[in-house]
Length: 370
Image (tube, rainbow, N blue to C red; front, side):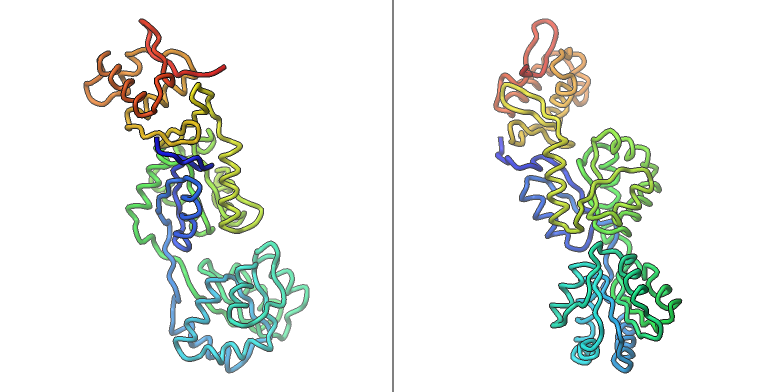
């Protein structure tokens, strides 16, 4: 047995995000998960550099009264693009006398990294809260620069213009098709077929794109069935990310705080509380999508051994006949001797003779503790 002993031991998790995927994966792997990368979208940095630089020059020429930063990565990307064009110093100078408004701590962190200070931060990290705050303050006659993320303006430009503001829009990055469409489709198929324990999302566009391709593949019903049965967990970094999935009737887990770290903690909590372990003489047995975990350790089973153990676990201590187990063996190797050999191999790989009981003249059963 390979020792894991972590809360996500044996869990197969699919990350649909392109940005920060390595950081996210590392946090999950440290807790025992097996991570598969299958981004639903790609991030296109500096979507149109020429337009961005032209808009930045216009802002320097006519400095803003208010600068709205909607994302940390976007604000940093904007300053980096300006720096490459030799405009960073002038751009930052024109912001020093402006009110800097951040949509959440990530955007505030990017503002601080640029040597500036945010005047106000949206606690809910939503564009709606940011919009309501500025409209309540009054924006008529003011010049507002709005740095947008890849999903567009969230209605900010239109709302501020309608309230009488002069709005300068800056689009820093956008969304494109997945860089590895084969991996994206493979893990949609895998989630529908029961090869994943969880599919994880970090943006609303990513959730929407994944859902669109699930429907296009004709797999929505299969995914929905697995989600509602509890066999597949969908989890997002916050309510906005989860909204497209929940709107389609797919319950989605998300933390109160919109952070990758908070999402990791939510996953640990979920698998700590929701996992139903079977008591055996060798310790609790937990079945995952592609693994079995016995007393905190992932068992090194063959695919056939895993399917046999899954069937025995589902029977909950009741006997399965050799004929029933023989149907799980590949090819024509389904006779009683082949079943006996498969059971012996399973016991050997599990390091336990008591995990599977032989019931004379009847078959086999999982060794369960009362």
